[in-house]
Image (cartoon, rainbow, N blue to C red):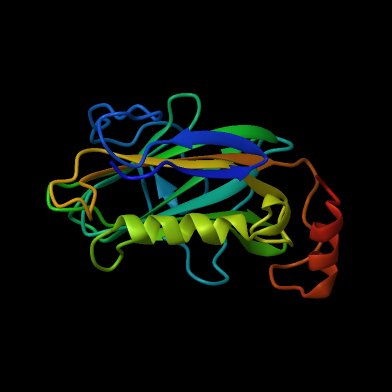
Length: 228
């Protein structure tokens, strides 16, 4: 049995890294479909085009909400589950898929699921979008390109531990809390065939005043905890 792995970022998820015991329950894969409300001019029905640099993504119609991009990359299937029954599905026929959703301030649990018998490959990027451009809210990559290993997941967890104030992009207005992961059976004891990643998007009410990468001004605000 592999040792327990845990990560504390404001909230705590205990997760098991091997054997038969899992604190994050892994059930059957979700439905192979996208459902829920997608937002903006890049989306039509259940499909969205991926944003290019400087491209207009529109603004939320509901006051107070913020627009987010979720970008999935993998040669295999990936799923992302959001609150209120929203499910985002990337099939194996396309290497990259983007989705745009409007989210109200508050804490919102997110779950990514990867499943492939010969080993998973998964990349998830979350970008907050606003008047000043896009913010690098969250990025997880394990085995893309290649095959995800436990060592890679552990390296990602260590990287998250070093992020101050749980604010991945100090110029943005969204924190990442309570990151946890678990896996299914792994025949070779090196590469999981199922992977679940969970975290919480903590979206604050204030609008970012500076563009991503604006330098010391954002770093000082994050260090002081301004805006949350």
